[in-house]
Structures are given as structure tokens and as C-alpha cells.
Length: 295
Image 1 (cartoon, helix red, strand yellow):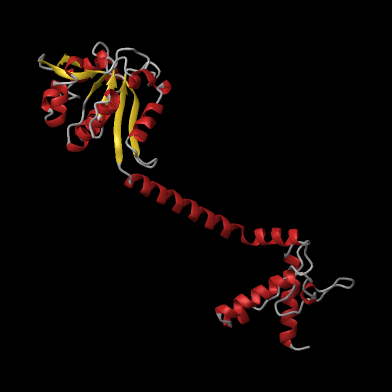
Image 2: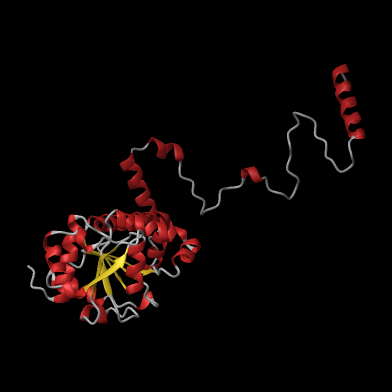
């Protein structure tokens, strides 16, 4: 035996002596052998149902070739299935695609509806003040108003029904909910609302905080109505400087006021908007309520 072989044996014996008894030491370069009675896992055949498609071959195919290949593969996989089994197989394979498509369709439909709704004209905007039960207010009379002027169902009516403006409680209400009591006046300044429907306390509070316009600030047809046919229904109130002016029209007892179920019998119209569109809507409402014969 050569000197080199003796050295390797000495190293092996020394390593085996120093190693714990439960560790099998195998010299580097020595081929592992399979024990008798056991099969070599490296030589086991792949399972019969294991997908063995060649990714490199697929990569070399064109898109149309890959589609044809996968269609043929799925056809072979579903050849022995019933119609119900094929349906469930299709759902299992494509469920995330289907969910994605449905989400896109729903999102596009919602966006389209929102865009369409925002482009429709607002034919009337009103706010109800001081109703003790604002959610019981009957808006069917507003639907009749739309029908009276042959508006489309898609034409918008803007409304707010839960406002509370009372001079005896305004300061406390403002302190408790300042956001609401500061945001609505900004909308009125932008002429978003045509009319306020309220009781007498609502008129007095809204005139005092300069939320509504005096009737003498309107001209043309409205001025003619306020000084003529509706003169006996004009109601006065004071502003923040204690100046008394005409601020509202009494509509108590009219079919419009009675049908709204406001929770009070004395009902008044006041006007927070004064641009050309607001004036047109105010005239149309007064014509509808009092049958003034205005075309």
C-alpha cells in the first residue's frame, strides 16, 4: 500500500473517531449506494397524471400555436367528462378571469351611469326646513311637478330635507354641528338651491342670517307676481341689521303644501338663489302651486 493510501485511511479513521455515533460519515467522492430492498428514488418513473409538457417547446411556439396546443390539451382532458363536469372544469380554470371581467364591466357601468347622471340638468332644487320628521316628507308632489312640465325621469331634482333653522336655538345648534350650519349657506351662495320650504321660524332665522334674499331684489316676472297676484301672501321678516323686508310667500293650505306632509300647517317659500336659472325655477314652482297660467 502506498504512502498516499495510508494517509487517506488515517484521516478517515480519525474523522470517524471524532464524529458522534449517530452521524454517518461518507468520504468526499465516494458514490452513494442504495441499500438492499429499497428502490432508488432518482430512477422512479414520473407519476402518470403529472404534467410533463416541455416548456422549452412551448416557448418556441408562436402564440397561435400555443393556443391550439392548449385547446387540444384541454379537449383531451375533458373528453370523458359530462357536460356538468366540463362546466365546472371551465369555471375552475377561468374563475379569476371571469371575476376580473365582471369587475371591469360593473365598474364601467357604474362610471357610465355616474357620468350620465351628472350631465343631466337639475330642473329644481329645494330644501325643507324644520320638519319634525324629515324622513316622512312626501315627495310625490315633486314627481307631479316634473310631470306637469314634461320633464324626463332622468332630469334631476336636488333636495335636502333635514335642515333645522330656528332663531331660538340657532346658536346652540351651530355650536353642536358647525360643519352642517356652515356648508349649506355656501351652497346657497353658489345658487345651488332655488327655494326653501319652511315654517315661520325658518323664515325668521334664514332672513336673520342672510341666507335668503328679500323679495324686492327680484325683478321682471317675479316682481310682478310679488306686487300683484301674490301680494296678499307676502310675509315679512328682519335681517341681521333689524331691517324689516318681505322675505317669503305663504303657501299654507295649498295642495302642494298639504301633500308634502311637512309636520306643520303654516308653510312658506323663501328664496336662497337669485341667478337666471333659479328665477326660472321659482316662477315655474309658483305657477304650479297657484295655477297662474304662466307659459
